Length: 209
Image (tube, rainbow, N blue to C red; front, side, top):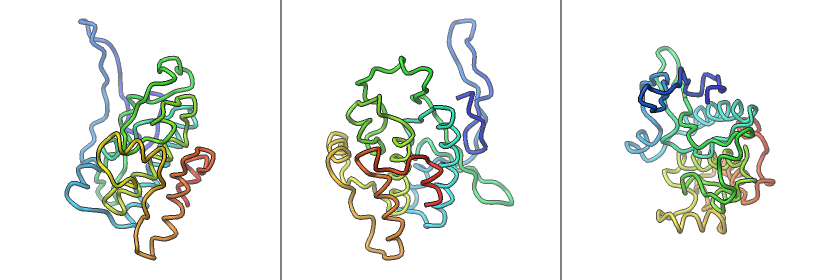
C-alpha cells in the first residue's frame, strides 16, 4: 500500500512495530463518510454523482493495477467521500488489507476465498486465486455502480451462500426500467461478465465507458 501514491488512494504515512512487537499503520485522516454510510441515508445516487465516483475509483484502481496490486475487497465501506471546499467531493479508496500483489502471491492459498460476497467476482467466489487480477476489481466496481444507481445489488438476495451461488451461476438482474440508463446497463453487464475475458481489461477502459 505504501507504494500506491495517488490523490484517490488513502495515503499510508508510516508503518512500524512497537516495542511490544505490535505492528501498526499511520494513515492520513479522512474527514467525511464512506459510501455505505451515505447509502444508509438515501436509496440511490444521481447518475452524474455516480459517474464522478466511478471515475475517481477507477483512477485509483488503475494506479494500483499498474503496480501489480489488486484490491480484492472493493466495496462501499472502502470508498471514502471527502468534502473539498470549492470543488466536488474527493473520492478515496482505502483498506488494501487483503490486496494481492504479484511479488507476494505466496501469501494467499490458491484456493482461499477472500472478499465480500456481494462484490466478489466469480473467480474469487470459487477460490480461483490464480485468475484474480484487475478484472476482478472491475467486476466489484461494476457491482458498486449498480448499487449506487439502483439502491440494490445485481443479485437480488441477501444470504451470503445464495449471493455466491448467483455470482457464479446467474446473470445480473436488469438494471432498471428507466430507458435513460440503458447505455449504462450495457456497460455494467459487460463488466459483470462471469468470464474475466469478457470484461474490459483495464479500469481505465471501464471509466470512460
